[in-house]
Image (cartoon, rainbow, N blue to C red; front, top):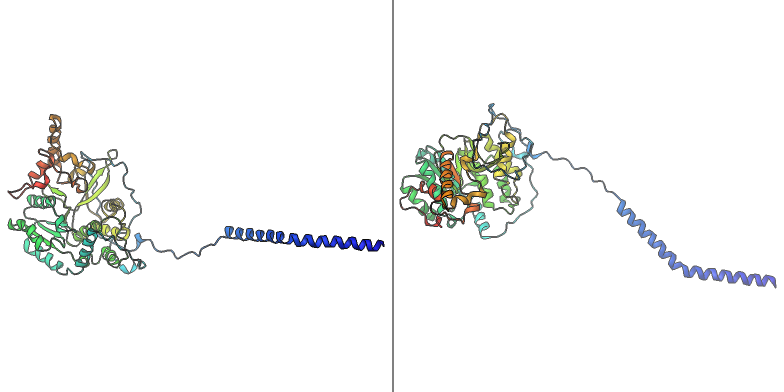
Length: 440
């Protein structure tokens, strides 16, 4: 009897254990599942993949071995300057040195992957891309310019660029042309422009030719102008869509490059179309102008490329073109222009093989862009009238030219008795000027 009771008790105990195991099994499995998930997650978080080191590419700044004859140094800035403006945030100057130039070996330049960029299809961008297409076909450029210089017996060579529509050429641009011939009646002026090299362009420029001035507008042959320079490589990549033109106007970028390549190939004087020439440049050679100086150190804080005067194949021009091709950035205003020449000059100053002069701001930029509108204002009272007279006298005494900074002053009209009014009155070569669109 006792054994039966014990068996019954064991049976009841085992039955309870079985039922307990059955009821607890799902919970146990769920707990195990949670533990497995936590373990996997921990592995994914703490797992570190070490990448295989890629082959290091050579620095673009040291791609080309270069050598230049001579042992000349850079002439330092003479700072007898008034009206110079200290910049609050001067550009950062890179300290790395680029090697001196010799004939480039373009096979060493890395080729980009075929990543295609398409500029925004605005009216202006379509005009620029038409210029690119026409520029690859303008094979008469070389012979036209060569014949022009040979037949004209130029005392000095001036270059301008106009990569825009003929409708955009206004009285200010024509005034700039007038000022060149007013100060340099025996000069030759080449305007590199596909829109002015046309029947309509001939009508616009005819009054100068009728006066006997030596002037020609030529559709650019970019392939010829950029040949055997870093510009050639950059331009070929641009045509293939392997360069992002960026947000800055492609026309502006091309103008920044064209002026460098033209002077490198021919030598002479480049001026922007918003430069008013006041006196002869004939005593200037291998010159670039400071836009501003640091009033504490008296050293230049920024240069500008609106006026460039250089001999053919000057090494500094080579370095400018090299910097453009290797560091082009179409999304930063000034990066390929004023900031570019500032970066390069800062690097080569004091190095042998270069010979150029940095002129103070008074030479070409007597008024900074932040104050240019003051030159368009007429006298408000006797004190202001005296200031205008003194300022005008100083500009006439110290300056070779005045930059009108069209980006800031294009829509500003000068007032009667203003400094600009008096300056441009001296620049007219046509009796039936003035130009009404310049007045208030």
